[in-house]
Image (cartoon, rainbow, N blue to C red; front, top):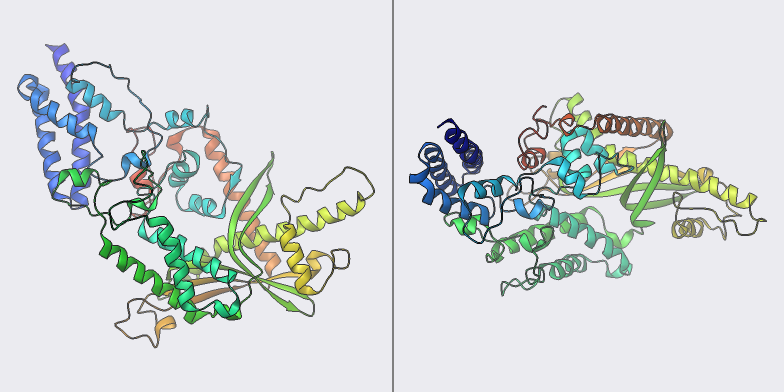
Length: 508
């Protein structure tokens, strides 16, 4: 009798807990049909703990539905959990699976961090030797989100959203518009660049066909998941929307609001009067540590150059498709918000300046080795040949031998965040905007680098300190050492639900 009770508990209790947990998620997201259905199955499974024979058929049918389809509390769970190892082995049989085997199969969909690491060919938690300004900022906000995304390589759920797609395609249009002759950089041409890029990504949606949907394996990172119609009254549509029709009207609304952002940009800055020095430029630099070094790498949206009598002044520009922060709080709070917005920009400026210093060092070394045959200088962490030639041409030098040292020639003057929209009640940006306007106007935020060496020194110390904190957590070799944050919009909460209870931290 005791053995039977233990057997029923081991087979059904994990199932009851899993169904109850997912019912709560459905209730929170107001998916009433799915939550009611899951609560019903939860009751059946609970009853079957003590009356297994009576409930066997119903439990069997329920488990076949749950295991064979997507999770009911998210449409993209199994798509984004590309590292979903089989943690509990199940017996293969030609007959229908038992309820205990089905329960084990469902539990097997939950993740184990050590299994993920083994799938990534790591025998322990690795220390990232390449970071980015975004990943550094992510760690300062939430250690656990950093662990999930940059060490376990998990994707947020969903990996592609309308807002993310808008940002990517607007950036692409703002890059490509400067490929046109100045006279051709009109607003219609800028918006047509957006349309062209989206057209290449969307596929043939009018016939419910897309280039991604035609492939055998669904690509979770594609744009094909956008603007699908999900019928909340139909469990099949709720659990899987790969073949659901597209909501063309929602796509049109999204497209029109995106084109409005580009119109905002055109009202803020006329690209016909701008000649960027570099666009979408990759930058990277080495940072020393006590043991070795690490690399920070990222992409700068745009670098502008202003010639002066003493040399060249560089300005770093970053496009933002989100709203400009509304500085409506106390002075200290507003300053904190502004500093947070510019922190990544300071890291980009630091990397660029380190590349300038490295280029100067390499050129000096090259001159010393010019008579030695077969020796070359590695410019991987210096300025690219293209950028050096553009700088020399802009400043009127024929070659690098005629020019002064790069640190004497170049100065970093300012950082600019170019927000393509703002809050309508932000009078700093919308003092003359009609109250019925669809979105707020574009607005720039500028950060002066008058004392840029002290700013860069402080930023370098912060970057090295963050990497030291990452190393300390890695050295502990415990997934539960990476605690989560309390910001309700952080993806650490969604990602944490994918894991077996107790394998990652539940502490803040």
